[in-house]
Amino acid sequence: MNAQITKNVKINYLLSFPEGYGEDEEVKWGLIIFLHGMNMRGEDVTKLKSYGIFGIGQGLSLPFVIAVPQCPSESYWNMERDAVMALVTELTTNHRIDSSRIYLIGYSMGGYGAWDLAINYPETFAAIVPLSSGGQVSKAEQLKDTPIWAFHGALDDIVPVDQMSKMIRTVEQYSSNIKLTIYPDLGHDIMESTLNNQELYTWLLEQRRLT
Image (cartoon, rainbow, N blue to C red; front, side):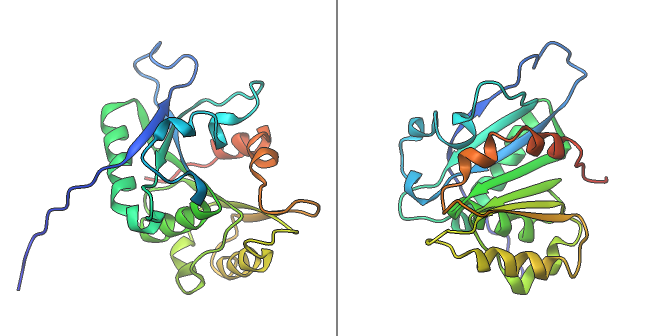
């Protein structure tokens, strides 16, 4: 049997553009996809306006287009995989996005989603930044060409730090461009400490997929 199946997908999202976007039509920008945690699921995307990467300090310079999709109620990011990838396609088609500089940042449930998307689409993302999560250890080899900077709180009582450490150790068997930052005094909510770190965005700007 040989069949072609068409799937309709839908996802709500917020989109922001960096200062200077549109001034030079020849300039293309990096794209950050930010995947939220479980408690922000739903059908009201406006509640993400001051959450996560949109809630960071005003002093940071973020020269990226930033998209924040919303996972529907009762769903998970791995179930929305096709919708997120359709969003990436839409944004790179309709905006001045550098397709070699597409980045994933995910917190908690979104961190699991970042691991999952990068494993299933290893040719798409220039780097991933999973926070407070773990990944599919059995598929770690898929990440051999994906730069990773992971973050976790040592006192996390929701996702034990061992989940992240185990995933990182496994990926390190296949990749050298990987690092893990563990906050010794923080628990599960590490978004503010991580997303307010200008060094993170400087590192992202250094990552580019080879075409």
